[in-house]
Amino acid sequence: MPKISDKGMAMPSSPIRKLVPYAEAAKGRGVKVYHLNIGQPDIKTPEVALDAIKNLKEDVIAYSHSAGNLSYRKKLAKSYQKFDINITEDEMIITTGGSEAITIAFNSTLNEGDEVIIPEPFYANYNGFAIQTGVVIKPITSSIENNFALPSIKEFENLITDKTKGIVICNPNNPTGYLYSEEELFRLAELVKKYDLYLYSDEVYREFCYDGNKHLSVMNLPNLEQNVIMMDSVSKRYSMCGVRIGCLISKNKDVMSTAMKFAQARLCPPSFGQIASEAAIETPQEYFNEVYEEYIARRDFMVAELNKIEGVVCPNPKGAFYTVVKLPIDDADKFAQWILESFEYNKQTVMMAPATGFYNTPGLGKNEVRIAYVLKIEDLKNAIETLKYALEEYPGRVI
Image (cartoon, rainbow, N blue to C red; front, side):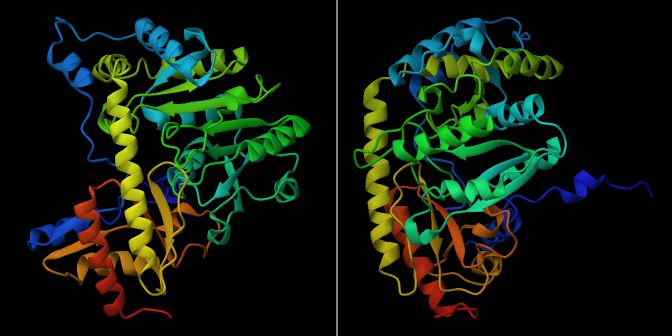
């Protein structure tokens, strides 16, 4: 029998999606499942984006430019100016989601065996992207004890070798909700300059910063134009994850000309997604104001209620709409399966993402889960109440 590739064997299952069969089985038994496992907001997609698709008059859905529709790139470049990110349409490539932006960035700048340092826990699919591209992740562990702040620069330097080519950050962070401060980013910038590394920054959750905290883009770090590569996506900003539109941005001309070759190889990004995303730029500010207030209310409710449960530790996230929560359990993977397969409360249960999949270091995250507060408060209330009773009954409870 023909063999599966080494890459295929090494490719991890998604911690976010691998429990789907158990959730589907629970629903089949008539149990309501609250999905706290995935960043799929229940916020409505802006009307302007939906109308652009509904009212489309095109007779042929044709290929776009490999870098994306020129009209969209021009409009998107202009929209970045309100964040003081001054770029042109030629300094971006529209991608099939933020995921493709990351893989194209890796393929354009890293050879197989090259190393990148990433603070963990990190977005689980970075592991998969690294395997696809032959890149080696060197994790540097952050801790729930200090809300997952950036580890010290000395810890970064201890990991740097002649194979180290870059540092990857997600800011605000998925899965922790941590927002890196200006001071942390400036320290990181000095390190990047000292060792002439790439700094890859996933800034998908830029608008979701709370409590008066401000987001600083790596594009605004001084004297780093040739080192910085930014990845972005419309998925969360406009609550339209399914359009699969992201972008890759850099002022490094060599990086962008190389990235274009990878973009040409996949022909073009999705046409309908680009049309919706271009229209979404016209979303009125009232939409974002309402979404912002809604997420703050959800966060505050979730943090307060989770911390009332004995043995639970829930940090207060500064951004995005996730947090990593410490639970009084022996094994997060077992618990996340058990609560779907063997537990229900008032004909309802909860789906969470075990945090083990967000760490690269084996053994970490075994008593942690990522929770996405993407449901309305009434649903969060029911989900957290269900979790409370599940923790009381779970055979592997640890106090």
